Image 1 (cartoon, rainbow, N blue to C red):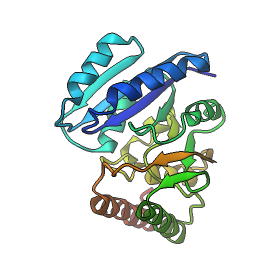
Image 2: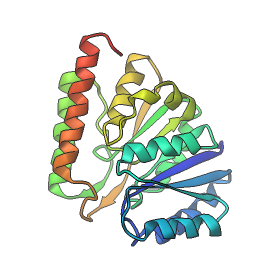
Image 3: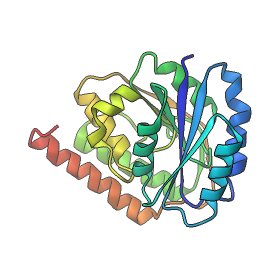
Image 4: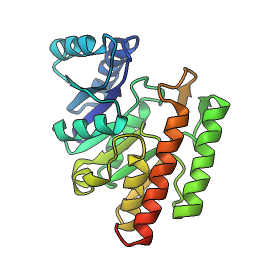
Length: 232
């Protein structure tokens, strides 16, 4: 397995930052390759920045960054710009997806530029409304864009850095960047694969679900308009 960068966006995650970072540090050495963990705080107002700085100082494999404005896409872009390695894995800070995804996706990046972890295709312990929201969005994407994939949430995704740099302009500041990158990769005939994942996520969402829906559907329709006018 090649070395990889693991990007974790954090927004007011002081309660879990330390424990989950150390959970990763316990697991990742078993993969027998070099790695780095980039923690990117975006607009946090809790004590997470202090904790992140402490983790950065304590562990050689951890680097911490803080950006002033909230936005998971902003955190992702900062992580990409700082990543040392070509293979990049993106996980939610709560580690709600099984860590096995890290190993599987990092290996698959030898063959693919984009790996989508799919909760719908695996086992998911999530609230009914979140499941329904994901399903409705998947159907909307299929009807409008013709994409066969089912999971466009930011977490549990992996990329080659050179792919991300080629299409960096399609990474928005919020949550639409997975859909954008998946669609562009499909149009450009890049190699994509979707794999099932185990997801255990019963805690309250860190996102405003109403605003997230507006962002996702806004991104979807913007993408469709660009396609119609040949701007992709």
